[in-house]
Every structure is written in C-alpha cells, then in structure tokens.
Length: 126
Image (cartoon, rainbow, N blue to C red; front, side, top):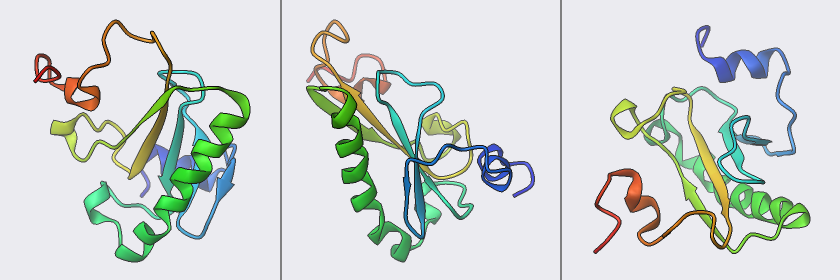
C-alpha cells in the first residue's frame, strides 16, 4: 500500500530486521513502552489481524517465541504482554498488522492487576 508507513519502510529496507520467516518480521519497536519491546510485522499488507491468512498465522507463534528468546538474551523481564490493536476503535494507529511483544518488569507500574484489561480505565479491577 502506497500510504502505509510499514509498507514504505519495508520497500525502502528501513527496518533493522532481527529475525524473519516467510510471513513475518521481528523488529525493535521504535516507540518502546519498556526495554526490549518488539514488534512482529506482517510482510504482506493486511490492515488488521483479522484480515491475515490462516497460513500466515501458523507462522506467527514461532515468531512470538523468538521475540521472547531475543528479549531474554539482553533483558530479564518478569512477565510479558502480547497484544495487538485491530481497528481504530481499538487504538490501532498504523493500519498494517503488527503484534506487540512487551516485556514487563517488577514495579514498572503502580499496579499491573488486570494487565491488558486496563486499556479501558476502571476495567482492570474485577
């Protein structure tokens, strides 16, 4: 897609690819929320995760595991958040399928209870 920032970066070979397979590539997040935050980006343009192919998704899990191994070579996280935003209402700002692998550390926030449920204020406590 001509107006997709990720497609432009791939075309111009601007990403420093840490690992890749036929469907996905692994890069450091340029706007990391914690040390070691990585992105798994679809090599083909899909606007959001629910447009990706079954075949591509079969190759996604090994990329998540590879990200974890690379993070743990350099950092010592105490946990992880793995997530994606699918659609503008979910907070997606780059309309190209990508998955965040975010290492979490003890005391990196006041109260991590609820994890990703905290994307909507007040919904993390239950």
